[in-house]
Image (tube, rainbow, N blue to C red; front, side, top):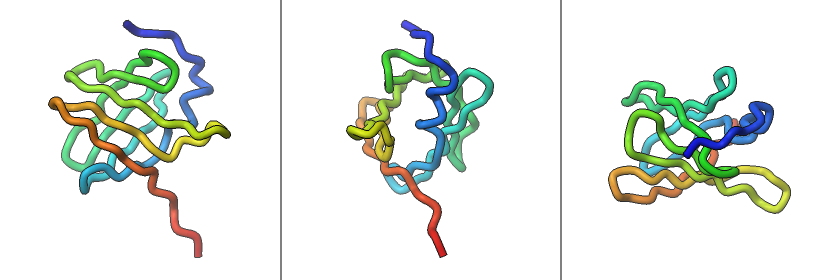
Length: 94
């Protein structure tokens, strides 16, 4: 079931996350969230509830874990019967 979400809220989920040795890039395109990896093409995500999204084209889901201040540093991907915890990759400061 798709739930409408304010596109402005999607920006907290945008960024690069490291999961199981791979990098996943979440991006906002128009009014939707997309995810891609080096090996996989870009896939659209649909909002399910709050910080939970599901893939349009494959059996899988993403659940972002906001902290008490609303910052999102972790995501759990549910794919192929597995749950993978990913951590946001922050740009290094010089």
